[in-house]
Length: 272
Image 1 (cartoon, rainbow, N blue to C red):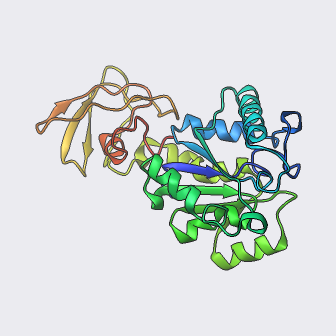
Image 2 (spheres, rainbow, N blue to C red):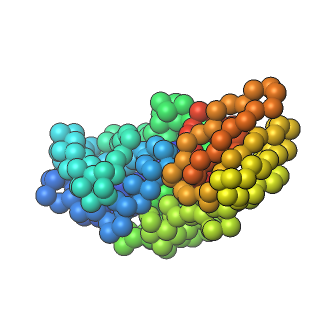
């Protein structure tokens, strides 16, 4: 199974918000159906959701920076309202257009906005994901690393599809489907026995003590009760000492191997 990303770079118009061609008024803001719930799923995984958007209408004089900011605020307000608190962690925009100001390094498929976000969030470029409805939204995955997924929208062209095929970039029908590809797990994946560091996991009653041997750490943990793991419902284990350690596991906890895999992150990558 592919590792979940450390951040998701999202196009805005046509991906999360309906593309009305140079949106300049908050009254024009409409979310793509299912997009708010998809963003909330990214939030729930404790992964930054970062918008990277071309806004050439600013250079062309169609709308101002203040107009863009007013649209952004309305967009984020609708996202929170329709997505049960869904949020965008940061937004980066390019105001340029080559016909007005000449070429720039930030307009997608340029990579400057992505590189700025990678620097600001201290990300590994090989561990991020890109989702958008045009080839230019995901092309950076082949230039600076990471996983790209192009989704379909009324703005997606045959040229976009051709370029994505040539680059070997994945595709999905919608943002919801793309997020499921990034974060969704099968029931087998959710099983505690599939944790990469666990050699044995026994489900026992509260009156029986069993032993979990974590082969990668070469330590034994005494388990008083192990319940079926539930996604999004567990706390990380304390770091074991160099000697044998007794650690009671409660509902939804996973082995230390998984927790160590994510450093300070409180979620098991198999259980998000």
